[in-house]
Length: 270
Ligand code: DGL
Image 1 (cartoon, helix red, strand yellow):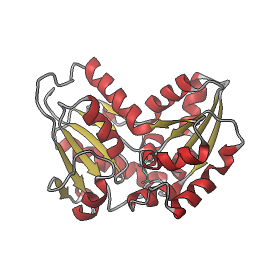
Image 2 (cartoon, rainbow, N blue to C red):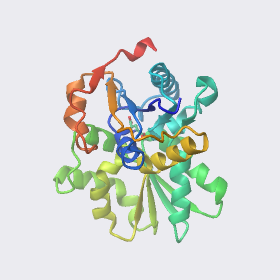
Image 3 (cartoon, rainbow, N blue to C red):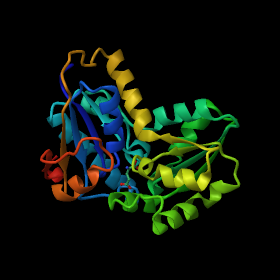
């Protein structure tokens, strides 16, 4: 089991922010990634649809023989239940590890959360933070358009459209005094430079992909499932739409190009 791959899924490219960090901190691990590019975005879909997609994505990864499933998607982590019992596998989402770090880093107890519409409507991050720290103030803002921009490779902070979009979505945080902002959707770290430029250096941005990678390592260590040989990890990618588009933009997220490692699957079969 130790030598089996780590399974990661998202609606599209966003979960690659977790892949990148996993490759940094666990280079010996193989990865199987599923990006549901045929059905992205998840964040504007109903609870029923998101639940169905999450189950199908996880079932596909289970079939690929993974040792853990990472829902590298803020929307799935906020709306769908924890599937570990159902799958008989360790399973994690992004909300808990991200909230943990945000609570540690805030100095004034004012935390901003941005995510997809479904994530913000679920108040998942706010609830988790206030469960542990009822005294903290949490300001939420959905930024659903960010997902489309990132899926289309529009992330350059010098791009006028990117600048205007970020300015508009960040406006409620400007005078709020938040000192930490959770990037509660795994697509959003790609817009971190643009958000930082708008918010200034006094605000710490928390990358949900990165925090989830760190947490995944902890789960594997505790379960005795961390690979400990000198294997050089490989990643294989599966998508529900054309591999070409995924290959084109995945390079924005990853250090190594996924070229010739992306395959199409029919997710409706799972
Ligand atoms: N990357 C996902 C998330 O973290 C999903 C974005 C979407 O498909 O709307 O929420």
